[in-house]
Amino acid sequence: MLKVSKQILFLLAVLWSVFQPIYAKKNLVLIICSNNLPVYKIHQESARYYMHAFKEDFESYFLQIDENLEEEYRLVGDILWIKGKESIRPGILEKTIKGFKFFLDRKGEFDYVIRPSLSSFLVLPRLKSFLKNVPKTRFYGGNLVEHFDGGNLVEHFISGACFILSMDLMESMAMKEQYFLGRRDKLDDVVIGNFLVQELSIQPLHHPNYEFVKNRRPQKIASSLPKEVYHFRIKVEHHREGIEKVIHNDLLNIFYPTIMKEKKLKRKVFS
Image: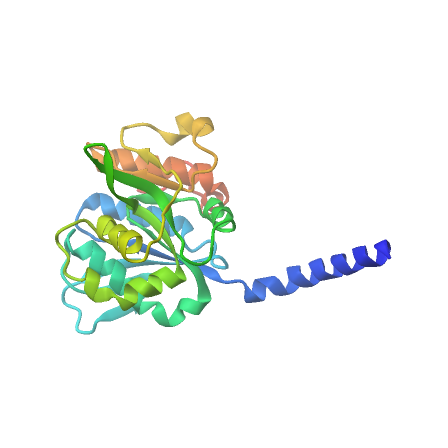
């Protein structure tokens, strides 16, 4: 009897390995993008080296404003062009909500939406592993930010550098777009956090990121980089183009060596 049970379990495992990929859902990555600063081109080029390399698990696009767009949206390659006016407030928030709305018809194809800023570097295999262990509904996670007043917590939200939502929450935000559009009173991540925490009673899950805010080469500290981190933020204080180009090169070679070898760009990525 025990032998038969093992055979059945083995058969079930084989069937699952064959058919599970057919039914497995992907994750949607929507990257906030603009051409306002030259350094943004470096970040965009870096993301393109890896963002399409794991298509079975992640479908990735940049969200970018085109003030001269006649229609509301235009999807061209990996850029979703959105009609509007480029700005930090309310531009980033409006890109996010309109991006959510555009993909709402395809919500059944994805488990989560990941919305990084352009200053983010994602390690997608690590992100995939992380997502295996979090809820598929009412999930809101990333690097937690807390605001205190007189020692009292007044609001908490996930940093807009990169946050993750389950698809039910993306749908809730898209359906309540009037709550978000035109908001200039607070930054996008604060408005989103207030909606999810206060309006929907969602408690955010903290997962730390790692920030490069100074001239510090990843290759020199590779062994000390946190093993569980999937999100690196790159935004130094001065001489951003030169320093951030080097940081991106290092991270690409550390976390995506196969991709870099295939492109024959082990040492230097950008000209």
